[in-house]
Length: 180
Ligand code: IMP
Ligand code: MG
Image (tube, rainbow, N blue to C red; front, side, top):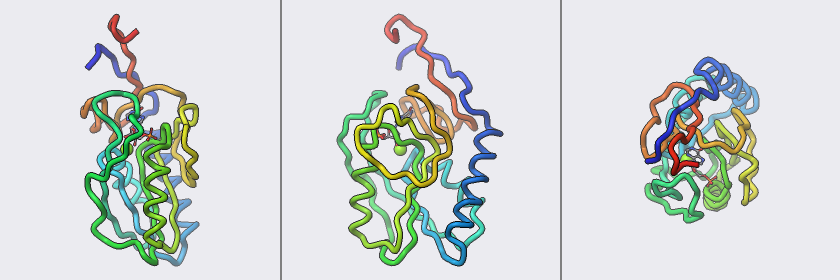
């Protein structure tokens, strides 16, 4: 891990307010229906829990884990399913809940794979979006915040597995000579 500091990019209040707005939007858009949230572990877990509490509809949850990362801060493009969903998706209104869409490699692969399982609808919801780094096209319906090309942590996002528990979104600023 390189020498670094964490600078607040989005406060806890800003993030909470935005999650409430997304919860309200989902409640409106899926009125009269049940939604099935699919959390992409581990990063999406904090966002999913906060979002689920703010959706005023019958909600079911499932979890999956994919890996496209080592302990590096750049996506390798290799997507591996580490843990698959417990439940079938057929006939469900599936909302995939992610922490961040960066290159889009993980999500474009995942969305195609989930589409094959014949859900009634398949929607993507991400807390953060870094469009500057996109290499694969992904159709994001709900975005918390669009951010510049910086490395962020907190609210489920990690740097080498730490900082997931920060209640805000922080920017990692590399301070040492190696980080320059
Ligand atoms: P993508 O496949 O490049 O879109 O990114 C996939 C995954 O990379 C995300 O789900 C995150 O887990 C991780 N990631 C991308 N950008 C960041 C970041 O700024 N901080 C922490 N993790 C990130
Ligand atoms: Mg992720």
